[in-house]
Length: 219
Image 1: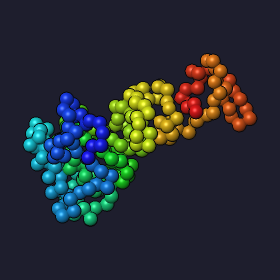
Image 2: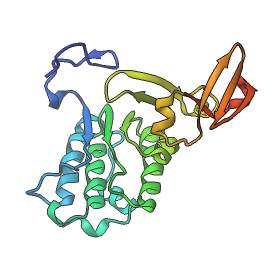
Image 3: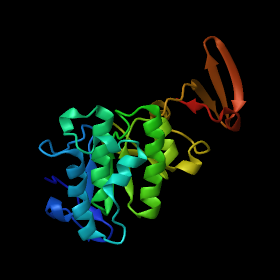
């Protein structure tokens, strides 16, 4: 239920559209697979929707599992899966539905390092080849910087604090919140005086011009 504002997808106002008409697919952190059917049937449910929406880019769901080396789980029920297997299956089902936009909630939360790397290359293919825009909510710095075109920082899930292109991420001035979320440790207390700054290292003060501070974060 939308309490205020509007939801637009492209040129369409979908605020009051029924969920099944919005062409939006979401893969939640807890997977949300249908418990009464096996993995392949979960993926096929998404694929049947996808073939109706965009038959030109419909793919074989088994290819998704093969990419991650998980073809052996096709006949398993959700309760028989590990957290990572369930998460990969959920993402595959969402993509198979060929949505107009894909929403991923903490997609790497249950994945090991190798599966994260496979997911990053696969998502780039999804966005570029299948032309499915993707919005990812994550605290995984390495993953975000490997797949995203743009970073958007929210304050406690509310207001947008800043937006920056990935290519400009290291060069652009950085807010304290973005530096904290992305795990940058070089945070210094600074006292400004005109175009100079004094960095406080305990009882030691060092004066420097602004350009010399990069990529340190002022607070």
